[in-house]
Length: 376
Image (cartoon, one colour):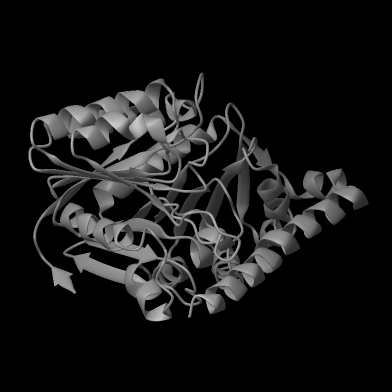
C-alpha cells in the first residue's frame, strides 16, 4: 500500500522529552486520542497522563486506552474510574491465562486526531521521566506527523479490536501482525505472533545487507541468526558496525543472553559498547540514511512473539540527527575490547550466558509456538 501524503518526523531524545510531548499532544487533541502501552504505572507520571486524558474527554474528545494485562498487572483498576466516568474506554490486552500468557502487547504509541503520533521505547512510568544520564532510564522516542500518524492510528484500531483475546482462529490473530504500509520515504512496520519471516526482520536484514555504516542501540539484544550474519558481513566487507547495549539492565537474564553473542561479533570486527550511567532501554537503528524507531527490541520476543510497531524513515537529515545522538551517548559507554573480553570470561560466566541464551531464544519461543497452536 502506498501513500504519498507528506509526513514529518522528530526525534524525542529522552524519556522525559517523550512524556512531555505526550502530555502536550493530549492537551492539543480536538477529536480523538488513542493511547497504547505495555506498562502504565500508578505514579505521578501515570496520574498526570490519566488526568490529561480525562480533561480531553471532558472537552468532547474520543479517548481509548489499551494497556497490556501482564505489563500493567500491578495497576489498580480504580485509577481509570475518572476516565471511564467521563466516557473514555480502557481495555487490558490479553487478560492473563496459562494458555496464552506468552503473547503480549509491547507497543508504546499515542495518536492524537490521526495527525500526531508519539512512539518509542518508554512506558508510562516514573523511571522513564529523566535524561538517562543523571536520572531516569536511558530511552528515546519519535514524534510522527501526517499520513504516517494516520496509519499508526489504524494499527492501534486493529490491536484494540483483539484486546480480549477471545478469538480462536489464527486468521483473526493475523489481523494485527506482519504488516507494512509505506509512504514517500517512510514505512510503518507492524508485527506479532508467529512472524517467522516478518516484515521487521525482512526490512532490517535488507538494509543491513547494503549498509556501509550501522549504528544500533537496543535494550535487549538477541537477534535472529540471519540478522547476526548481516552484522558480521557488514563489518567484514569494511563497513563500520557499532552496537550500543545495556551495561545495566532491568532484565539481567537478557544481558547474560546477549553477552553469549559478543565473541563471534567482536571477531568479525563489530564494535560493542555498554551504556553505563543508567538502565538502558532505548531502541534505535541507523543504517546509512535509514532510521528505525519504535517499540521493538532486537530480540526473540520482539521479532517473533510480541505485538510490536516500528517506523522506518529514509531521510538523510533524520539519520544525521539520530547518528549524532548515538555518538553523544557513546561518551557514556564502556567499549568491549575483544582480547580483554575473552580473558575476563570464566567457565561459569560462559555457562550462565549460554543457559540464558537457550532459555530466551529457544525455550521461550517453543512455549509461544505451542500456545499459538492452541489458538487455531
